[in-house]
Length: 150
Image 1 (cartoon, rainbow, N blue to C red):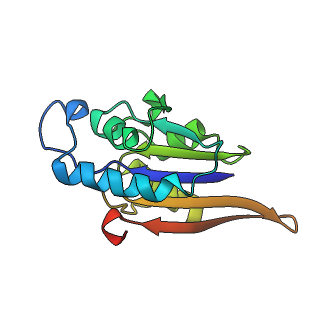
Image 2: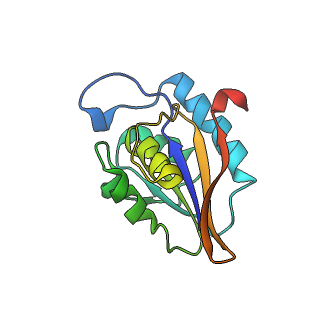
């Protein structure tokens, strides 16, 4: 299984939290990362997006063909994020557009077995892969990149 964690791009400050839109910089971040992902995503990638406006706008830079998943809204636990993705038993690739701290905690949990507070920058993507090799289950980080590195 492949799991791509994409933190929403930069958003405006304000309240209510779920209604905050992307800033101009955030729209550029989302566009850059979308261009990068568009040529690399497997054709059968399932895309799950938080209902928060900033996550929706980030995903819309890539496609409008995604599933809004309430279970990955701000404040979600990393275990809920992984459950929504179908980790570890999924066969295909799942892209999650979500929030800190759940994304960083999920990445830490998958890489170390502990839900530590790892930071994923705004607009950045972490691409993880799970495979079996000689009876051993392995999780590896295939890619971690922020939009300003593209």
